[in-house]
Image 1 (cartoon, rainbow, N blue to C red):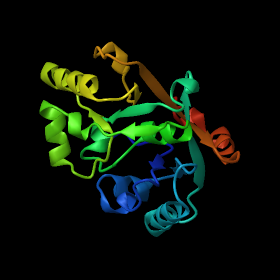
Image 2 (cartoon, helix red, strand yellow):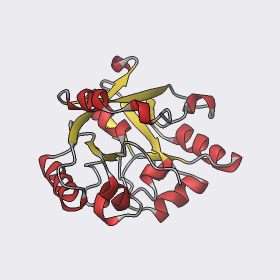
Image 3 (cartoon, rainbow, N blue to C red):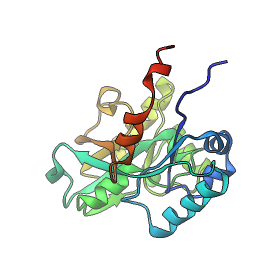
Length: 213
């Protein structure tokens, strides 16, 4: 059996309660040697307090808890400011992941978009079906593309939506998969720790164990 030498668990405050109510999330949290609560910069104080309480309720005593921000960047922010934006988010995050919005919506708000256009009324095929199946989704279009048919539905939805620009925050480069009649702009995100505890913990960790020594 393979066992981790340093078990790091990331907790999302935008989904408070999931850390203790879903498997294997709760099991991972119970085994954690280090917990990182990410997206603190965009979470509410109530969300942060709830996940902190959740971590305390199930994690090992005295486990280090690191707070971090998820820093969002767009290559040319001026492209977004004042525009009517359609946002495409990670499919699994928005559908069975339970999120109503993701990094793209947060970035659009931060960068001063005039409006976040809902893709719901323009959705076709499998994208329309996803909105029906997961009514919690707000305006973001889930990036479903597991088959040529789904990619075609996604492309048709993006082309039909009355927006000036498509902002996407997906693990893949959407521009390589679909042909859209409006600019496609990617949102990048990177974890940024608050404080210096993480570097100190990793610096003290015995990496010799990882090499089998």
